[in-house]
Structures are given as structure tokens and as C-alpha cells.
Image 1: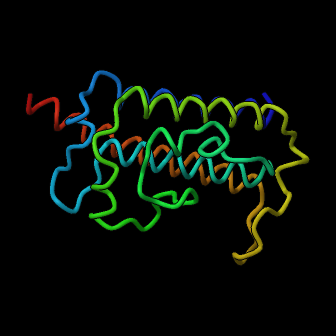
Image 2 (image 1 turned 45 degrees about the horizontal axis):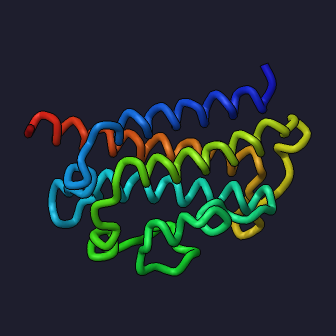
Length: 170
């Protein structure tokens, strides 16, 4: 098994978690917040997808799917196209509104496809490349990719928890 194989497997697991958290829910359920300061499933999935899109595009030196494939227009959010949701206030979280499962999963799957295309071509020799010097120590490609997987799995798990609460309330 190669490093690329491990990354493909890890991002594949994220995709499974994302689909499991979103599939079959209504727009109202996707937008539901357990309290006024909480994130919704829709926001969590949008945010993890935006971060993955942003980070993969940056390390691959390609345009984000968000803008390249017109997803920013489809979502129609009142945010700058560079927004990823990092540090959003409860009011900003609410602005995502009731995105549909098809919209959320369509964008996620497009980002996933671009991610898999990129990581499929990586070798062990690529992973030590420094991709961000703003940290001490500087961040390597390998660390950045694992960071994205870790962040994605945490947010997908949060979405799954909210889903469970909502389904018990039905």
C-alpha cells in the first residue's frame, strides 16, 4: 500500500461519513440547530467541504471547485468567495439557510473527486514538501493532508451526532 492509497482510503471514509450524515434529511432538518449558538448539519458539511476545497486547491496549485465549477453561485451565500466558515458567528452560520441534501452532496462529491485526482498522483517523496511557512514548524504536504482528513472526520462526526438527535425527535 502506498501513501496515495492511504490518502484515497481516508478521503473515501470521509465521503462515506458525509453521505451518511446528510442523506434522507429534509432542508429543515439540515438547517436545524440544537441551540441558537450551534452549527447545523448543512453548515458543518458546507464548512468541511469548503476547507477541503481550499486546502487541496492551495497545495495542488489549482482553482477551487467552489468557483471553478460554479458552486458559489449555486449556493448564493452572502459571503466572499474565499470564505470557508472558519470563525463564523452564529448569525453567519444561520445565513447558510436550508441548503438541500443534493446541493451539499453535489458540492462535496465534486471536491472529493478533485481531491482523489490530486492525491492519486502523490508519492512518498512529495509529502515532506513544505506548503505553509506561517507555522513553526512549517507545515508539510503530508501534515496538511492529514489535517484536512482529521478536520473533515470531526465535522462529519458532529453532523452525525446532530442527525441522531433529529431522527430521535421525529
